Length: 303
Image (tube, rainbow, N blue to C red; front, top):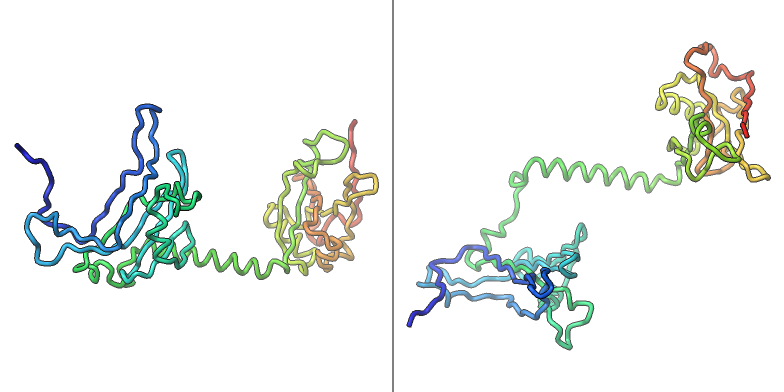
């Protein structure tokens, strides 16, 4: 009688064991997840599976446990890693890395429905195990040198640090800034309703400025960003009236240019303004900060 089996001539420094957690079910004609309990050891001895003994024992230490939570249709992946092979485990959950116990990394990921397994962990179990051979552990887990890191990864990490520093600076200085929401004639022209515009649907152009910035500085910023000469724009403060309508209120450009935007907005944040712009063929007086000083604004609404 013949015997069928597998023997190994040698084993590699790193062994990946892929557990059969997903399988096709002909009854439902779908793939299903298998949550059966499977206990795996922290130390693995594979000597008995070798055809002939090797120079070093085929003993392995558990290095990583890849875990899936959920079913065949979706879920979440985490990995538990023993970075130095010394039994001190870390949990990698998306961009969060935290210390964890050996029990959390190993015992809690056996799967199954035993009484000692919480219901919430029933669908959480290991689907891949990574073992490192004891004789190669120093070589495999040797410290990473700076020249081992790909240049593209270094550049990406530096950019992420720069972006994080900018976000941290913005959070720390958020109280110093305010938003200015800018409306133009286009917002009025396309609106059909009783008021000049719909505040919930309006497509604002938003500027972030320091609260203590002057109106002149705000106008210079808007002129630069919106590609208008500063003499060709005039801001109007949008006010909410007692009859529950919004109307533009004139700003005295002669006297208010050096006032702070937080004072002109009366502490409103965001501050909504209507920015009136000169027609391209209208003459601009370059000698003045604004050519609108002696002009009035007239809004006509057709019903």
